[in-house]
Amino acid sequence: MFFFRLFFCCCRRRNISEDTWTTSNEITKRTKNSSRKGPSDLKKENDSQGSRKIVTTPTRTTINPVTLFPSSELLDRNKEKAQAHISCKNEWEDVKFLGVGAYGYVRLLRNVKTEEFLAVKEVKCKSSSSKELIESIIHSQLDHRNVIRLFFWRKFGQTLFMYLEYASGGSLGDLKGALAEDDALRYFEQLREGVDFLHSRGAVHRDIKPDNLLLTEDGVLKITDLGLCSIFVWRGVQVPLRGFVGTEHYMAPEIFTSRSYRGPPVDMWACGVVLFNMLTAGLPWSRALTCHNNYVLWVHRRKKIFTRKLWDKLEGLSSLSLLKRLLVVDPSERDSNWHQLRRQENRHH
Image 1 (cartoon, rainbow, N blue to C red):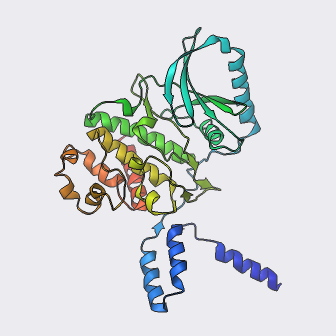
Image 2: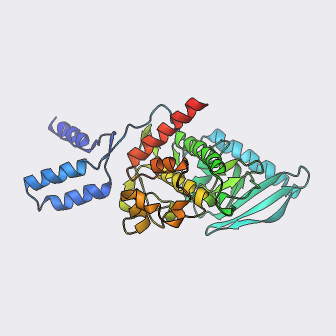
Image 3: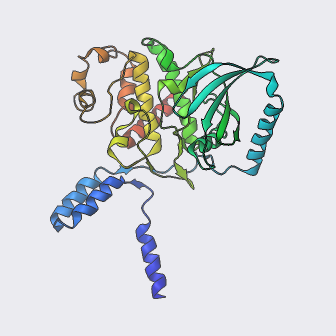
């Protein structure tokens, strides 16, 4: 009986509240310094650390998460599509290279009979648990107007082939110069809908940037390249993410300063930087760190930053208030502003 009580007490001590998120580097610092400080010092430190905690309510009812372990039915359906394509592979011809990356390249295929196009992403996949294979499994379960569709995937040896929807309009990164505010907001609205869908399925992109936002001939924006995508929901509860991943210009400050962070606010910050880029054809800062002057001016002295040439383009635009709501340091405040924006837009519709 004694050992049962001891085991139960240990389990309860390890059960961290689901409503409180504390970064692991804060816990580490507090543990290392606690042995050298008196009771009064520890009380002051705990009070100051407590004020920096991010409090949120885990989303349980609106998230229908994707699974890293797909059902046999899903795998069989993918296998049938792959076999159907292989059986008629003589109907497809290579058109051109669409892009070359560190992990592989993307080619454009055309069906000689139907004139349909497919984008084929070829990457090296060394094992059954590699991130490229996980990307294909996650991507195959996502179906939304503003997310590039993955029709099917197949693996031959160490090469993974991903057959994707082709967006013929290029990417946002290919557009030259600043966009008109109406055009930028139209693209931003589509980006927000796509990101909302990913989050509703428990997935976070972590590399939102203009080069990963493709356009169709009709001007429909589609999110692509889920290579850094991660699942942030486990059994209906949001869990912290780890890893220094993404493109530095678009990475949220908590990725630089914390060992763990919440997933959705990271994408929200990147969306704000993308909006800035569409309006100015530039970037607000190279890194969201206090050692970068433009970032410090934005956080602490927002009025003075508008004397600078790049920010001058935003003065008087209605989008400036939107940027201020997205590019906030506190992830919980950013998350609240994002959902408030969504509710306001739903009322207008």
